Length: 253
Image 1 (cartoon, one colour):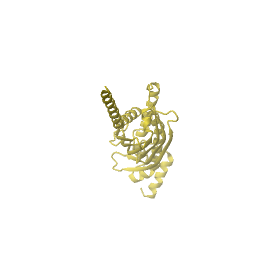
Image 2 (tube, one colour):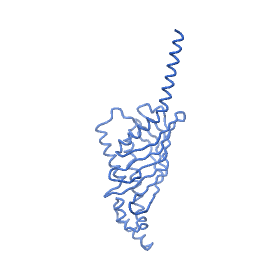
Image 3 (tube, one colour):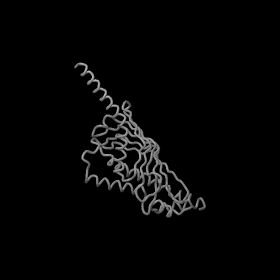
Image 4 (cartoon, helix red, strand yellow):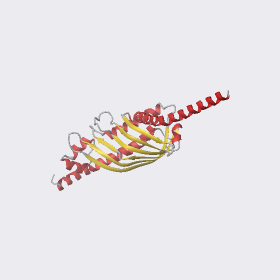
């Protein structure tokens, strides 16, 4: 009898250890799938994330090769938002709790694609789509949404690539570093709510950079500012037109 109890105890221990090992190694996949599904639900576009790597002892994680697609109506093969790696400092144990506690997210070398449409651009279209989906999610809330608290989110060395089909010219504008703090407040927000908060800021920063560079680019490409603005889905205020005319005069355009 004593031997049977010892055997049962050993078997139970092995099962517990095996379950713990399985959970540890499957947690990366669970988190990756959760991020992909929730971001896709919040944005309505294709989302790809190659891998998530969590290190419980170091209380850290890493996201690899993230891509966010373009909204309907924009056919570029390049993703709208992409990065190779993001470093995360977090309380790994909180991944099992209703509110996930994240101290810092640092996203390295982000590329943002700017593609113009008939009267708008892909960034503004996506921001509007995210806002609309946010309204719908409030009217039909999830029973138990997983929430996040992010103390600091840093998008380091962000760049905007301009999609100008048929022009044969690639332009890249540097946005520098974007910082967000206290995302989620005390009780946490869903991934969708956090995306709703940061999306307008990224869109405004990128659109302002494109608008500011429009006169210079018009001269470089040999296009009128009106034509280039139309290609980028931007209005052409008077000062921009005057600046383009001034630069054209300097360079003999």
